[in-house]
Amino acid sequence: MAFDDLEAELALLVNQMTDPPEDLHELYLRISEKLNEYKALGLPLPDDFVRVEKELEAYFAETERAAKPKA
Image (cartoon, rainbow, N blue to C red; front, side, top):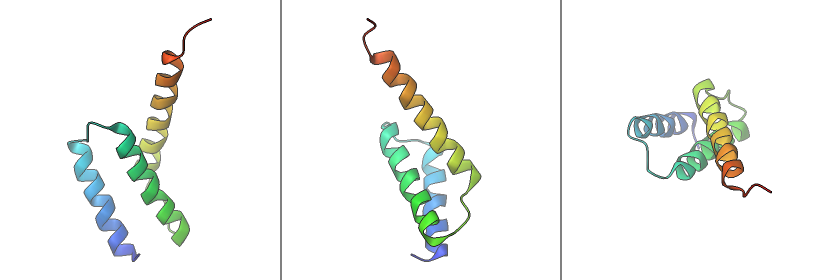
């Protein structure tokens, strides 16, 4: 995929983040997929997407910990 195509897809993701999908897992997967494409092409990763990916990972980890029954 060409760099311009990746930039366009990331711009689309940014636009969707202003009106995010109800399913945060879907958003996380889409961001991770785009970041993996950048990595595969050896391109620099957009800092804001890396940050959002990490924040979502932390959110999911915390949600999972909170959902586990306490012994």
